[in-house]
Image (cartoon, rainbow, N blue to C red; front, side, top):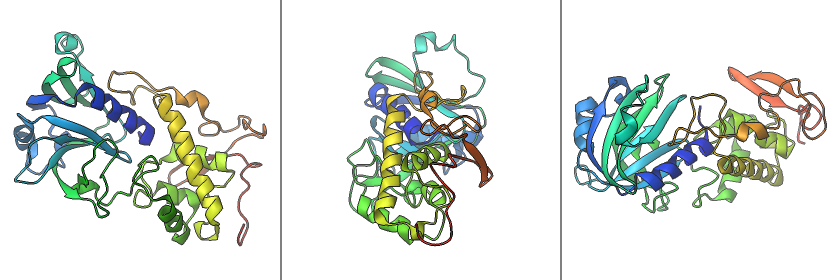
Length: 309
């Protein structure tokens, strides 16, 4: 599933290529892709028609395009969640006819985009992603709702999602205390999107390796400096991944131009079971974790013993 760097790469592309454009029409080719929209595919298309896209924003793994006109007097946005394989692709209509993707689920027809008329295509092979037009709700702290928009508002379905580590409005001291109050393992805390959003399995493993902390270490036994070290490591690794366009293992994650990221070449432990640790050469270990996998260096990240470290 795309994590924060991959979603931010897509948001940045939308910001550059479609913000300022007006939606002339919208086609829904698979109703299931707008299943979270209240009113169904016809309502989805109707509520987008004529709207200008004024900002591209993101919180964690969610992104949205702010609409110029309110919906029933309330500010609104087109919310997108990419799921496991969703892609938002910006296409030139003059050549798009030559490119017929078998998993095209929805298409927005745009005019007056920064680079001329464009299609914004939602492609989703596994169909776990979705689009919806939704109201924006005021943020509880009065700060901007997501990276990329100054509005102190967030789509209502995202209101429960915590701020992410790249959000300028994040209070890191508050987050440190929130993590320490949890009674769980540190990796579970990192993956809990109501604690901090945007961190998934890949970047959690990479951050914990950088911080030299085992994924099972209990959060309520961790000191503030150790928690901060883990959060700083997660911020660092995601920032580096963002600079390389994210992490792609296959064609399911691409940016708005259809290009893959290449941070996978820089991964230290994730997916490298049996290979030497890049720091100490000890073979990387794979453990089952929440129906997925965790990758650690047994020497750099020894399994925690009972009690406080």
